[in-house]
Image (cartoon, rainbow, N blue to C red; front, side):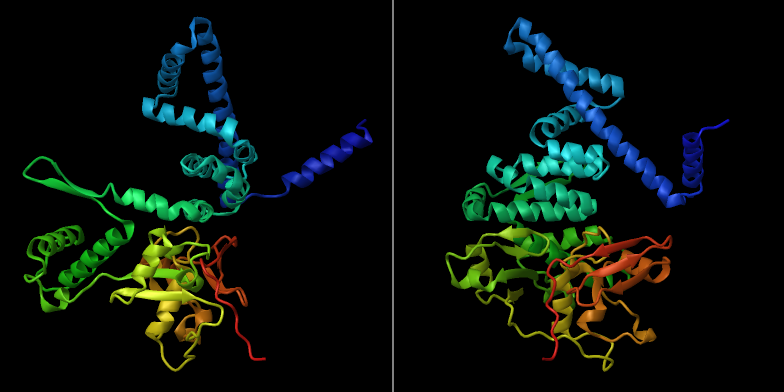
Amino acid sequence: MSSESDLDTANASSAYGAVELDAVDRVVEVADMMAVFAADRLVRVDALRLEACAEAERFGRGLTGVVERSVRLELAAALRITEHAAGDLMAAAEALVHRYPAALASLGRARMTERHAQILVGELDVASPATRDAVLGRAVALAEEQPVGSFRRMLKKLIAAEESVTLAQRHAEALTRRRVVVEHVEDGMAWLHALIPSVEAHAILGRATAIAKVLAAEECEERTRDQLRADALCDLLIEGEATAHPASARGIRATVNVTVPVLSLLDEEATGPAVVEGVGPIPRERARELCGGAEGWTRILTHPETGMVLSVGREQYRPPEALRRLVRWRADRCMAPGCGMPASRCEIDHTLAWDHGGDTSLGNLAPLCKGHHTVKHHGGWTVRQIDDSGGAIEWTSPTGRRYLVRPERPVPVFRAA
């Protein structure tokens, strides 16, 4: 005869077994197990390294480097991976076990993925020790709640904000290394490498891309986008202007969005770096230079009392240019879960379709890249903006799961008194 405790166990097992997992649950379950096993593997890899190094101490510490190379080779052979990959695995294991145990514990509980842990190590290891200590807890929290792409961007921003005091000094030192190099390859071709400031690099690429788009629309044009970009770059650098291109392409200039806290322009003691879309933080001195009035720069001063176009209702479908800029500035990126496409390269979408009664307002507009724009309309997802959130969007998948995407810069909600 079964005891009462046995009966309770059987009932509990029966109740647990009655809960069915759908296809997504089963994938997530395996992913969680992979994270747990990844953490266990890292612990064992570091234990292997330490054991081998301890053994080497009997012959003198000078052999430690040789022993670690030997361990790397054996790992590569045993796991059937390259020595480079084995070295990365050993470095990640050492970092997580000894420098970032909180991240290792999170990975072991499947609160973050192995890719999150790799990014955390890669970004924090190049930061100063003081910065690591200051941001580690927040970095782990971000890894536990953000998709990989968003986590990488937010972690970079977190580290940059912590180190913003030295940003100008590091940028000035980095500027001294700028140069142009030609690397010859086969068939009469060569790579042209230019180590230049990120702002200028993105501006150059943006102008070449804009010219390429215009040229691609010409009749009988058969060159690819990459080929058109390369040809435009050659024309601009060699001839000084794109005289061989149609007039519609010759007038194109570079455009870069720079967001500057207004006090940073006025107060030398103000903190917080300026941010260039697609690039990241730049020194405030550089921001003041960019905001000096040159054409081609969209200057956005963040201030709680700034005026802004919020809505044109149902009067027109296409948002006014000022509203389009505000929508892109608010989001900074495509507003699909985990997407990193800069907002400047996205389409402006009516969250509630215009055909279904949606209006042209800040509360119903968001930038979506072409691929996610298509998924929103034809992939079975439901998308809505969260009221009074400053621009957050909730995506509901075909299986019913919900994913919240917050904008980079939430806009305050204004109401009549």
